[in-house]
Amino acid sequence: MKLDRAKLSCFAVCAGLAACCAAIYGQTLSHGFLSYDDGLYVFENARVKAGLNWGSILWAFTTQSANYVHPLTWMSHMLDCDLYGLHPWGHHLSNLLFHTADSILLFLVFARMTRRLWPSALVAALFAVHPLHVETVAWIAERKGLLSTLFWVATLGAYAWYARRPGPARYLAVALLFLLGLMAKPMLVTLPFALLLLDWWPLDRIDRADPPGVLVRRTALLAVEKLPLFILSAFFCATTFVMQASGKNLSFGEKIPLLGRCANAVVVYVLYLLKTVWPSGLAVYYPHPLARPLWQVVVAAMVLAAITLLCLYHARRRPYLVVGWFWYLGTLLPVIQLVQIGTFSHADRYTYVPLIGVFVMVAWGLDGLGSRGRLSARTLSAAAALAVAVFAMVACRQTGYWKDDLTLFGHDLAVAGDNSVAHDNMGAALVDQGRPKEAVEQYRLALKANPADAEALYNMGVVMEQLNRLLEAESWYWQALRLKPEHPKAHNNLAGILVQSRNFDEAMAHYREAVQLAPDFLDAHNNLGNLLATQGRLDEALQEYGKALELDPAQINVRLNRANILIHLGRGDEALRQLKYVLELEPNNKNAQQMIAQVEAAKATAPSSVTPAQ
Image (cartoon, rainbow, N blue to C red; front, side, top):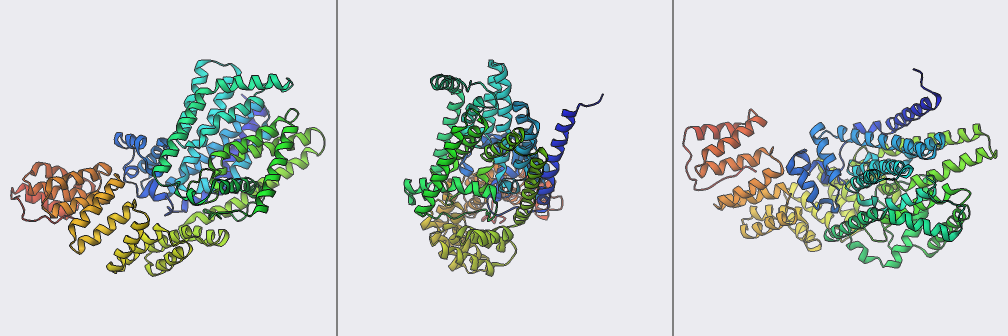
């Protein structure tokens, strides 16, 4: 049976979108992990590395790590670890597949809602290739943006299905998809507002010819219809704010008054538009200027006001303009930094969903020019194709900067200016490459840019410890803790130095503080267990080793430590279970073989001292 022309065109668009995504982001399969949050989400996270299991799923729903409630994102990373281990190419492949799915689904949903194939294709193509979206796709830690957008677009499709024939089952499908999206990233809190815009156009649930009073009443009724969705949004807004506050991620906002944050937001709204048209100077981290020049704020406010008035003027005749524009303004609102999260002024990743509104304005604007005969269809098609091609080339180049930390943050320093975050991450990359002396210089530059950078102080301690300059390392850790007492890694590392200087009581206090601040800090649990074991507090040591193994059952040294204590407590059968598990993971482990022989010879006796594996 032959496919009709519309289906062939639809298939061709989907194939083209997939090809564009692969052409731009296929290079990420040769990229590695980054020190910038990839460790938090994947390679340093014991829960994630352990893969999907009932314990890790429960953790995903209850943890405050990363200061977000996004269990589906955690579980997607866990699944990747099950599928690919810690091979970065697999995690990048998942990001590529999610972005491809987002792009294709966006096309299909808009084509179905508007019954307009080629404008929908242009929206999806711009979404697929725009350089501002590189950060979301090329950064493994930004999986939450990709996954949540998949549910965002699916919710749009479900809502269009519901709008054609409203009913409880269809509404439940909308609510469920929306909830899943919120569980991937809370930024979706503006989705009910976006659905109201779709009621205006293209779903036409509001008669735009009605007088203003009727329009207001009809809009109010449609807003009430979405009340359960707004309640979900309010809940996730509240939980996100509480978690960000408890994680001290809002403290930087105390340095910027509300008026300053509003001024930054006004400028950033226009800055994103400029970068949409001319995507140059893109960086992973934009330092916050603290105060924007008055002229920038005034000009930006005038631009925003002019565009808003123009869209409102054309609201009835060209409804796509008001929908696209208020989509852009509204979906950016949670991340426009009115509530200051972090120390940056704006971020490319925040445009992933908002720019859909701008692309709608462009695509249907061009379609309108063609339908009115202002420009020929051939000219418009050529212009659109050229824009997509240029954006794709720029995106391909921008993606190349994400191959490793030194390249990414070297580029950041070149385009965004001197900042401590870039120097910190370049230093971490140099440490990983075995170049500690060069890393020291990067950390000195970080502290020059920001003397209150606790992370740079901690990192300086790490390097000094690697260089065996323990007294200097201890001093740096103390400085980091004075600025940031809730730094678990600094407590853990400082405790290690205190153990070497035989200051056991103080070391114990810092290890306990580390595990209290970060209950999922596997190394701290193991180190605390080691210290308890050397002091003869064997039952307490077993508890700490048990907590470490709950986080990652495949930790060989922890199992050896646990087996060692069990042997000395005369609990040989339990020790054998631990040791046999070790041999399943590492069949030639000599320590395990020797300890098994010791148990089987029934020579285990209570020790005078216990020396744990490090």
